[in-house]
Every structure is written in C-alpha cells, then in structure tokens.
Length: 282
Length: 323
Image 1 (tube, chains in turn yellow, brown):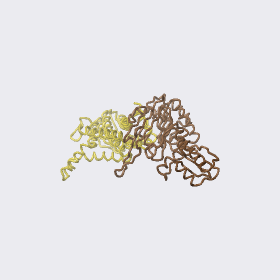
Image 2: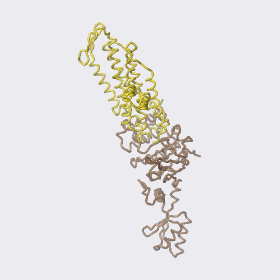
Image 3: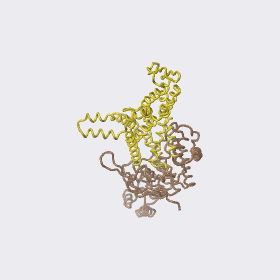
Image 4: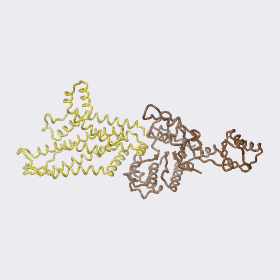
C-alpha cells in the first residue's frame, strides 16, 4: 500500500510540477465553460419552450419532453467526451514509464525493496487515478451544468464515464507496454493514438475483407479486428449506456464481445509490460 | 566475529554487442566479500566492471554466471534490498520534487512510516548541511547539494549495506570530509557495510579499510590498503658513487624494478630479503651505500602499476592522486 501511495504521490506531483495537471484540467474547464455558456434552454412549466445553442435557435419538436431532450443531448455528448477524455488521458500519462526508465532515475526506484511488477502496476494505477479524476471532473461538471439548467437529473450519464475509463485503462496498458520497450514518450503516444484510430477503422472490417482479393488477407484483417481494442464499438456502447434501453435500436446496442476482447487486449498488454519490465536490464 | 553481508562469487557478466553476435565480457568470474562495519572500496579503470558488479547486487542487471548475495539473500530477491542504501553515479532525483518530497516518496517505497521519514529526513539533512533547502525543488540544487540529498535518500532507512557510486562527486573538500565522517560513523555505530565505488583513489584510501582492484573484469588485487601498498615496496637507494649500467642490469635480473631518479635509484622489491640481496650485490662490486629509505607506495601507485601491467600504453582514469 505504501508503494502505491508513494507512486500516486509521485505521479500527481510530477503532473502538477510539469503543468500537465494544470493543462489537463484547464483544457477540460475551458470545454466545460464553453459548453455552459453555449447551451441555453427556455423551460416553461417543466416543458421545453425553446432551446439555443451558441446563440442560435434550435428546432424543438413540440412533443419532446425535457427529460428526453436531456437524455438525447447527454448521450450524444458522451460520444464527444469519449474521444476528448481518452486523448487527454493518454497525453497526460504516456510518459510515466519512459521518464521512470531514464538513466539515473530508474536506479533510485529499483533499489527499493519492491518487486518490479509491483512498481509498474502501482505506477499504472496512479496513472489511471489521474486519468479517472479528469473523466469524473468532465462528466461530473457537465452533468451538474445540465441538471442546473434543466432540473433533470440523469445518472446514466455516469455510465458513459465508466466505459470511457475502461478504454483509457486498456490504452494506458498499451502505452505502458510501448514505454517499457522503447523508453520513448513520443512513440508511446503515437502508437496508442494509432491503435485508437486503427480500432475505429477495423470496425468496418467486413467491408475491408470483401474488398480484398486474397483469402489470407481477409483472414488477417478479421484476426486484427478481434485482437485490437474495439474503439468504435465502445463509442457506440457509451452512447447506448447513457441513452438507456428505450433508445436502443439496431445501431445503438450494447454487446459483450467488444468489451471482452478489449479487456483481453488490455490485460495482455499489461501482463507483457510487467513481464518485459521484470526481465529488462538497466 | 562480524558477519559477511555482501558476497560475490564467480560472478560473470557478458553483454551482447548491438551489432553482430559478439559478446563483451564485463565481469569474468570475480569474488569478493564485505563484512558488516567494513568500508570496502571497489577500484578499476573505466570499463573494468565496477558499476556492473554493483548493478548485479541491486538486480538492475543479471549475471551470466555466478552468484551475488546481500544479507544472505540472492540479489534477485527484492527483500535483499530492504536494508540497502544506494547512491548511483549520475543519479537523477526528479527535479520537480523538493528534498522533503523526494525523501517522503523514496522513504515510503522503502517501507518507512511518515513519522520515521520526517524524523530521519531532518536529521540527515542537518548532518549533510542542506536542511535549509528542504522545501526547495531539486532542480534548483547545485551538483554537490544533489549529491548530498542522494546520500540522504540512501541513508534514510538506516541501511545495513550502503552501495555508493562516486559519492563525493561534485562535493567541495569540506563536504567530502563530512561525507567520509558520516560513512565512518555509520560503519562504526551501526555496523553498516559500505561498498564504495570510486575513481578518486585518495577518497578510497582515506575512507576504506579494504579494496579490490578490478581489471578487465577480474579482481587483479584485493586486500587491506596496508597489504596492497606494502606489496609494492619501494626504496630510495642512494649509492656513494654513481652506479653503472651493468649493476642496474644485475639488479633487474633479480626481478627488482629499477628507476634512475636524480642520481639515485628507486627500487621496487618483493621483500626485505630481496632488498638486502641488492645491497650485498652493490658491496660485492666495491660500492658503498650512502642512504637507504623506504618510499611508501600509494594506492594510486598500486593502481597504476596494476593497470599498466596489462596494457603499458593504458591511461588509467584517475581523477585524484594520493601523494
């Protein structure tokens, strides 16, 4: 526990001292403020009389209830947060392993009576806490703003945060693996963003497979699809979770398979990162 | 009888070169042991394997063969580092931390509670004369101050074993003496075994009881400083009249080292009997001896002789002498 606490303190102090924490939360706050000032709802007797976004009138169906509008808005907006939170999190935490592995620094960490696996997992947890606090800050703030402006409390919005954190945990495991191998923050960030976009691209694997002339190429794409994290499917799941069962349709549905295969990807990355770190010579 | 706390036996380490399949031997079967309360110096030219040996003791790198143990536990066991303090050469304490924070984080990682960290931090920073900098970020520190803080981190958990790589690097002469005093006090009061790895031979000579000289990955010489400096006994040999080359040649035939220095000879002999044989040789040729006095070898002499014995053209990396 002391090792974990020490790592959390180290990660938070580093984030604060290097302005990462400030920039991280500053960007999030800017986003929240823009959002708070952009949305303007006119509610009369509990019903939505009009809505303005960035000062422009939004067409509102007369039969739409304020609850449904909030649900629709929050589910759509959670998709935006999915990308924003993930990118900010990777940017703020991908350096944790490369910086620790720097010559002259790693000796100080490894000369403690702590196993290397425990050390890297503590650091991973500390990174996840940093990222998680930002997700909570963004989602929580927007939820409060929406609740304040509409008086509608829609707790499902936080379910989206859970899925976002799940993806961050997976991608952070991959960033740690690349960090252990290359000791480079830049490569860790680029490779992790690459995995994110590759995952989105592979969501259309059926069409890519159909366009390929050779069978082994199609099989390769299918295999990659099952190996890589399902970033597109998880984005859909975020929206579906926030929207709730009444909004589900053939596009907006929650399936277990993307979660399972993404979790396996993250777990394998974390195990590999720990194993390589354990074997690495400094 | 004091216990052995650092044991190194048959330790070998080979690195694979990044190009091709060739292997570079950093350590070629070294043995040494350090007892509790002992101040042990590890010497050697660049690339002799000193840092590799220390890294193996800390499990930062693994041996190709042989064994390294600390307090009876294999170096690969994290528990062996429970009572080990380490000051690496060129260490980088994160610059964003203050001394208080750095001591707090590394203290927790060593299993200390907050109260002990607080008490020991103040005590050590006072002793190392950087207490007034406790809340200043490390990036503002001079090299000497960073070195002192590094030593404080190494000493924080009252270790039984201290592994120090160039501990006085960048420290002023007064600070060096203070660090020497601290190390001696730790060894005497707490039985701490100190393994000092340094290029500064004068530091080793002033601090350590025993040394091992590494050369090309092997222990070229080991023992107490007294033993090592006696091994290469030198004498100032002043004959009444100049000595001819024939007699110098005859001296050399006995295995003695002979140097002509300002009209006298500087003889390196094995022992007193050898010295007396040379005096007899001089007298047998009708010569007379005007003066004979011992010249104490320094650790630097021993070191340079050992390095040159392998490679006469070698430039041993010595940053400070001990004359």
